[in-house]
Length: 395
Image (cartoon, rainbow, N blue to C red; front, side, top):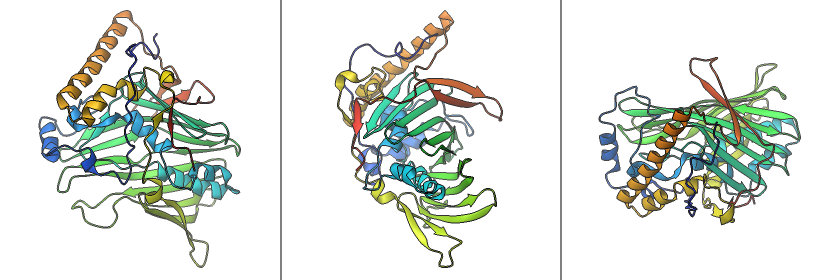
């Protein structure tokens, strides 16, 4: 068996970090000329219904970052004076904490740029970032199928997050639908509460109006408090009209009585409110302001160059990232092919020796209880250590 480290180059490279995806980042910041036409040409030989898990994109269609970084940014990159994670922990009652968790879950939804996708992480790739006392660690624990594990802890506030994510993108002729499988857990250790939730799916449409939307249903459940939230994410209408772009609606339910306590309404990139249905005045309270939280996000910085692992996303893809930023597509393509070819050779070597890959920071298991295999990840360490890369601390 082998673990993280063998698949990475021993030559020390500098990390290249790019701005996080935010609502004030426009498509023009990354998109190349005639991108829509190029997207159509990219899929002209792909059959409808095809699984795109193994589909390799040319660098022209890549964001200058790995999907591990995009995944991690949804946790450690947030602005504004309202520290939502502290609000989850500081709520005086279970319903106060639950509504804060609903707001926090919504805050992990981030904009997507049409026609561009992050790099597919290589096996054993990691991403390790700290934001204040919150330490976040991600590892690519499987390549086929692609499975990402996340462990985030805040020892000071006694908060822990354990996520596993397996994205399954499929092509449907005029659209791509990416279903995100996996369980997300947020544990408030001081209160003995565990919140379990899922993720909306990503729908990318090519016609009649090119766009990318988060859609579908999300549930958030806390067995200890007996509370449940049912949320529905909606994008624009088929023709691109309507005012429901990036909307989220739903309700918070007391499971013992099946009674609705609050109704949730708003837009995940703007304002989300809850309405007390038991109050005769139908009082509305703002629980999340996406415009404030997802604007002017700061780019993480390397504080300890020597502490960077060779498996760090910003190191593994540094040459590709810099080439994309420079719009040197030939060099980006060459650097990306070199990484992919090295990974194929390492996979052949493991197979010839009869070795199987063992993640370094997570235990990986799978269940066949449903129609498709579901992968679950559990961290090997209790607390995530402080990272060499830091994001702006919570204000």
